[in-house]
Image (cartoon, rainbow, N blue to C red; front, side, top):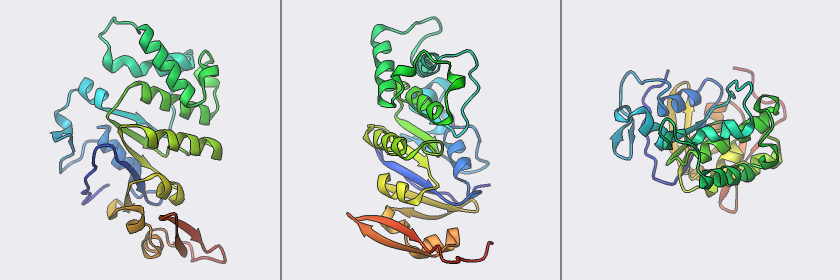
Length: 242
């Protein structure tokens, strides 16, 4: 359940969505890619109501990488990533040579070019996540939505994937559990708690000790490193579980 959510996103911004478990991060993203229809209010995409877009228009505009990889038994990594072409093709139109080169380029960006003929279903969770990111890049979206894109990745690929996303020319909206990753890569942060919007602003404006304590119920010290907030937690005892 979401209530009183109201924020603007400028074209090309990287938006980090933060909040504890159950805060509404995934629900918000589902509203943005029309998996859930809001009971009230409006979502506008490039000044058009989101619900006015056709399925194909929506797929050309918005790409999504969810937490849970779909079951793709019998499909290779190449097959899965190639699905990103569908919004741009007619029913029986095949991939061009230029398309194939772009697919290889996207696979190389996520470090999976050598796995492109591998069965998608036997990849690790992190590899599947990166393959689905490559599929989203092949889609050439104007808006890229990601639900915890670093959840299954080790540190090397967390940095690689987030740096890749930051370099994209599209708008990125991603949910995070790691406050410091969100702080480093986000232009703006939306902080949620219990389905409500707590704060919206730059990382410096949102990632304050008081907001973190109110939302996460932990003691935190926030310092600036190269003008980026860095959060340190008090691990000595902590507060009672609430």
